[in-house]
Length: 487
Image 1 (cartoon, helix red, strand yellow):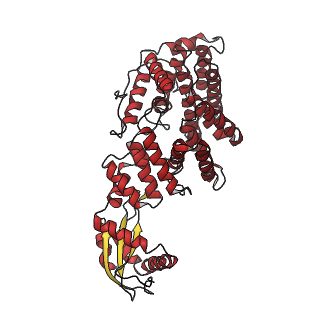
Image 2: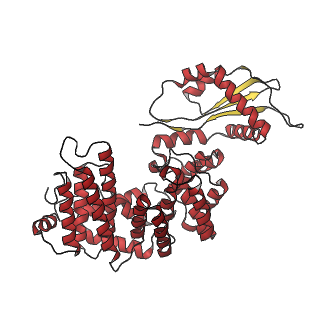
Image 3: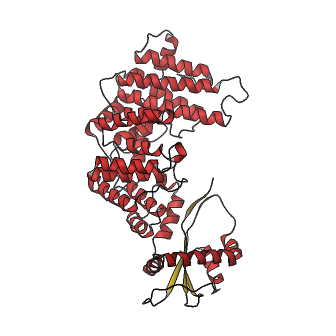
């Protein structure tokens, strides 16, 4: 392959890339013409290895609409169709075009450009191909703000890859290579490119996003300043709010409750339906992105999350991607009825990015979407824990079941496995003397069928009933689907 050779891994490779950038961007005179000629010689040498999808898919009916958009954009990059990319980006930017659900098409375009098709942890050969194409685009269309911002963001992600590789001793292992020098060089290149982008005539909302993300990683105080600049430029660009909230979680050096307070404050400050929608967007960012799924659930108001989703759908129309986010949030916030209704709307159109895998989506759907008799039992058992006495009684039942029936539970659970596991509801009808009179289970999984006959006998004190209460007393021993062990 002609062009920049990244396979010569080491500090010198990034120096070459920096020199190429200085040549093509106009920041400095070209003192090493051989490098410039090498970059220019790649214009038609790469054939896209991914099929182009449709740029106009409807996200309200096609759960893969945004993924197909990314495929199309990345295909144009690898085919060196830079003028087409600039036309698409300019149109997306000037029209503020959005997919159903409010996701900016411009944001999805940059998502396609920031990493190779294999993702951030792609091998060096894939990063070579990707950065070659972006570098050439900057050199070919020197006034393209899209090209500059895309290359800067890609270098940020490449830097993150180098840092991960260095931490796991993949970079320079067994070689005399200063991997951290490579990282610093890539970071410096990205800063230079962003500086150049700031001088161009066309201003881009995603430029502010990349600047904000860079500051979030380095200086939280400056990040607040950049956040204010970003929303002043384009208050409807939701990624600003999402990234700023995520970096305020305790897992990223924020204080306990800081992210939730930000969500509350900024949504009220924006106000109206837009402010409500931002509250939902932040809830999704804090709870159902791949980077936050295993973190504790953010302490946000479920009523306001619901209100925010309704506002988002009213403003921008229904989106399968946002429906999946809402259903996932409902599961995490133990709102099974809300999850069930949304999952019925979604049907089989699960979003793999939101759930982590289609298997996990299917496990949640098979558990949450239940027949009427199970819905009724859920309602009855939920009503019994609305009082402090009911909550205490259910806790005692849980503890006793764990004590007396743990051998059966272990035997029926089988061997622990990696990946997601299915959920279950076991409904116990308790007599006034504390005896288990009936057991019903959902869904009809091997575990449920195996363990149901084991639950029998009398458990500690009888349930505490209200004076006028009559009829069966149901307790739900519920285990919602889980992500399981690390793969």
